[in-house]
Length: 388
Image (cartoon, rainbow, N blue to C red):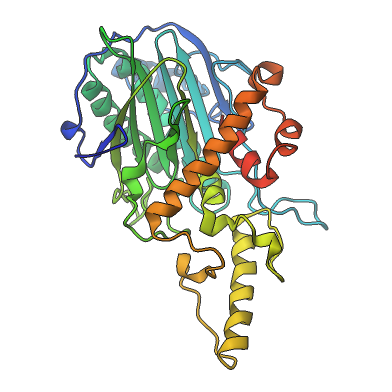
């Protein structure tokens, strides 16, 4: 087990602190999923043998509603999913459609479940994988979450929920996806709250505390000393080798929360755009490097810029792309990785402070993009707003 800034993480949940919790109430205030229909149209076979038998007998296709009806909009369970990829001026279609990110938030009386999956690569199969991961995970949690008595119980249930998510992906012939699931639970006799997180891939969980700013809870899944490859999620569910998932960076994380703290999940579309090396916060000042709406188009521009730089300074020699951070010119030096990570969190904190100024958020927590983009850089703020 490793501890940093009040966050504990390990590859084995048994190593983490174990706290008794107030039994989760089955009362649900709100449950939201998206973008678009989210997981609503995913049909899953029931877990219980009795329900399974009845389901097969009647063969009724029912959408995914593990915690009851989904709400359209609610202050306690709401999210926005959008694409930052460029739009083709001729076809008027956004590159990478359909959006393969899927989220779900289930707000209970004394608990909350947040889930986010990001389908690997593009296409319908990637989106299906993300939807199946979130739907399968929530289905398992709806049947077992309320039996938990400790934070260790929650971690064990989450691990089995991930296994069920993997089965759902395989059963639906989908491809690969990341998955990050966070559970907020009330700690017994302390007045504080626990945050249990399990993630695989590069979908991450963060907290915002007024005294400390933004902190990452899932840092153990990509520890600072490791070199990052922007195009490799580090792990994923789905048939990576034809059937089995890639659990290289499967990580269990735990931290303690106080009333008023904020928990949010992001896909790499958010975290990458806050990384100072990838985002190149001042890249619009660099000749020949225009602001891009997507990470891929930004990488293309950076690659062109690097090739020109090498040609001008090395008599025309061309460097081959290694698809890693070494491809990015060091116009701004943010290495070692620890410094890059701190800078990313600092940039996120500045955005969160501005969002706090906007409270109460308009339209029942539907953050106004016009509000945000007038205050700070549009790309980074738009990213963070998608999953708050």
